[in-house]
Length: 456
Image (spheres, one colour):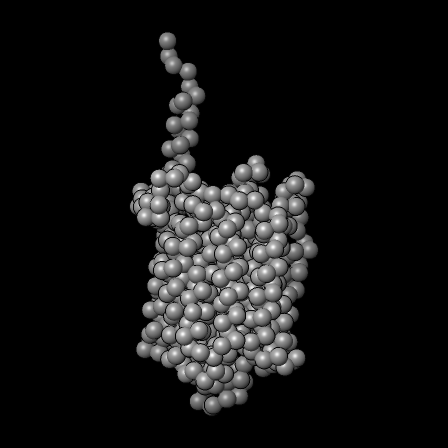
């Protein structure tokens, strides 16, 4: 079955290369040199920030186990990270609107560097502090950088449609190519060169420091609501009011939480799903295959966005396909008899699931630039970071609950739950499109009425 992995990886690589090299004039958007310089600077920084994140992923669990902690201890460390992101991360991330997005991005770098340093200690309390810092950093990574980009893009007077170019390229490189290279580099440092499982964290700190230096030297500051009479509680109230009063924002937040909650749950489930009887599977190679699938998705998204297709329309299809792919383990469990032999290679059912998981990761690649595009359209600038961190509260709460009960339910139940959530996201996406179209038509009628001359 080893050939199967190479066939899947090679086929995906060929498709991605074909899509990127075969882009026509319809798939490319004419821009200006000033925008290209701005875009390339952001993508460089974003890639360095993501490399700092991806380098740590493959060895976090392994490092904790090497320090002698059991599954329960490690689970509590992970819960602390997501819990920190939900509580402290929301507060720190929300300060970006008031204190400045550039400062928030620098805070991300410092928090994550300190988190990496704590990995040198085998003391549980120190590692717990590192997880708390990592949780804060994660909230900033997924709010402050995007908020800075959207505000700076608009401040410089670039075409709003060009935002989708930056989003697509950032995801293609930062969440795809960089993730693959980071995984291979981490493996080289820890295993091939024999520096041990702490080495990838040291490398991550170095990349984060380089990115911070670029931010300090080349980024300007921008803010959300800078009024002096608004403290943190007032910002929260503004964000909550915006979500409660605008159905589009509330729908967008629900869609994001449902999809990302399913996505993070999938991260914990794919390994036991592919090796239920301790089959020997190449985890690193499968991870690289997933990231290649994500690159395929972002490449497809760049074409869809370049052709100005309605995001609210095609994302309904993406969520529906995602729901089917995560329901596949439930189907294969009933249709394909599970092997009773311990060890060995991946089963036929595992092969089917792996193909489905690759399709799901392609949907993830489409999701990121598309959700970023919708957030840039619907979330008001004055409270952008605050609202984006509000969206992450139910997401982190959901992941904490899943982590706490991961052994309480059969894996098919967990996948079935994720499939239901993704189907709900498709339904809510349909509702968002209807509300958005109604809002646009109402606005168009009002503008037409204002342009008509009064009857004498």
